[in-house]
Image 1 (cartoon, one colour):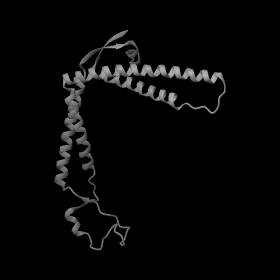
Image 2 (cartoon, one colour):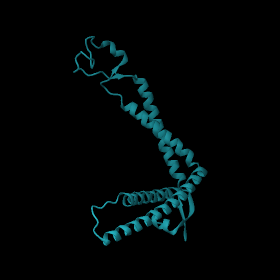
Image 3 (spheres, one colour):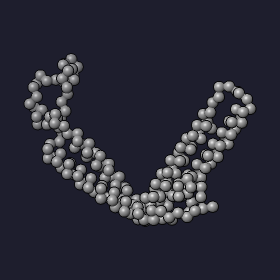
Image 4 (spheres, rainbow, N blue to C red):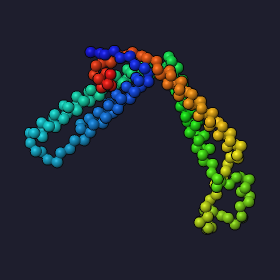
Length: 196
């Protein structure tokens, strides 16, 4: 028996996550029971019965997990189709790019430290200052070189702020497009597991 469910795309994503979590936990536990069960000795027919019951129970749970996986696949296929129709797929690719770029720019901008020495300042270091070389004074720290001048750092900071602003706007646009609804027929078992 099936159940018709009509939800927003964002809610379907949450349903798929919930079902995936259930699937992952069940499969993990089933594998543990069905492949890692150990006993230290034979203690009688009750033990055999309990072990056979565990096999039956966890084999059934594994089959249920596979049915949940079928439902997850249907939800993801439908989401993929709808995301392509609404343009979310392309926006997500752009959003991923912006997030990766933002991470790199943040690390470079925040990596600039006050104790760094500019390339042009290296010539002012005393000639007898030697750090970290064999046979010389190992206690002197190596000097961090500021590879970017102030204008280059400001340029990267401006680029970072522009990327961040675009990512925020894109996230809002994706959220807005994910308000579209789509209807799916799920088995009652899958709908129940998803809380629908």
